[in-house]
Length: 425
Image 1 (tube, rainbow, N blue to C red):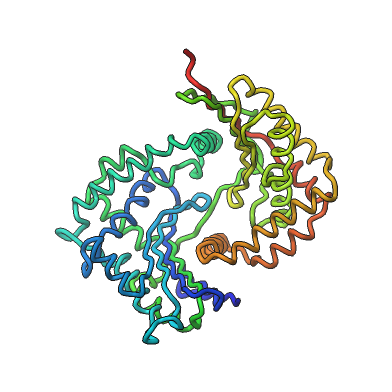
Image 2: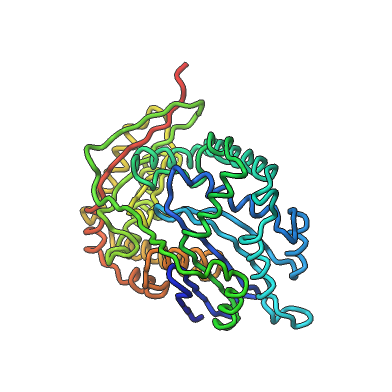
């Protein structure tokens, strides 16, 4: 497996993972803009409207047939959040040329179809079709409103809203319900033109093709995007909480309480020297089935239905997520913090440390078994200029010491606590 990178022009980059490990190739084109309450709704709507049809394939049935003709290629669109940026992507998975029955090339026509979707949408009076915008606006409203149905994810979402209020990170990548309802074809068309002009552009390919061939395919299919642009990607990282710990409470018609706790990592992110230690610390604390939160707070003390921790490696946050009985909120919070104090004091064995590092290393190794996960990792590295590749990170994780874990754990500071309880009466 070989990694190649090339800047095609200012603000436009191509990353190639050349490997014959898979029978398929994956090509992705991603346009990245700052996450903003003013533009997030349009950013979430644009890929869905683009996916409705192109000038040559003006509806989803014809577009699907075009993908099927490429040996059943899988065409998709989506919107992602990376730190304080919104990423609009078009992706296509397709068989490698080695497995085409007639030996024909699949990469180039797949890239051309992606270029159609992104750059040549079906139009009405010089802009997006009104019925497509209205129907996708309705679908987006449903997606935003459906967030609350998964109470575990909702509690984390609300924690982030409160913890990062005033920061772009708190903006919902899907945007706002009212804006989605009111979005017109004219407004969305203007937002689309701005996206094409201003976004940072990242192309990724994983598969057996030579990098030079991939570049030619990209240049042929996406030529209008290759003009230079100034599109810096930034993420505001608050090393410390801005004040005293805040507790926010909501009530809903639920039978199980949700307790989410947000910590600042002291400024440690994926670009920091201490990042491998943070990964191991998180695994030891709450990021695995052998963690202190799982074994002690959940299993031994039976205070939580579930308890785990996760890291946002770009924003520099750690979030603890747990499900509790309403009467156990205070005890659960105290127990969760007690386990963190144990890590800060080095109260863990060598076997526990090794198990935590082993879990992280295996998780990182497993990512190279998935085309989608490799694309996601490369996109993040390109956007935030991270040179450390997967193998380098794995070696660093395996070399983490107990002292390094203690040091990074001591940087973790509680910022905000969110409680979701049932309605009284």
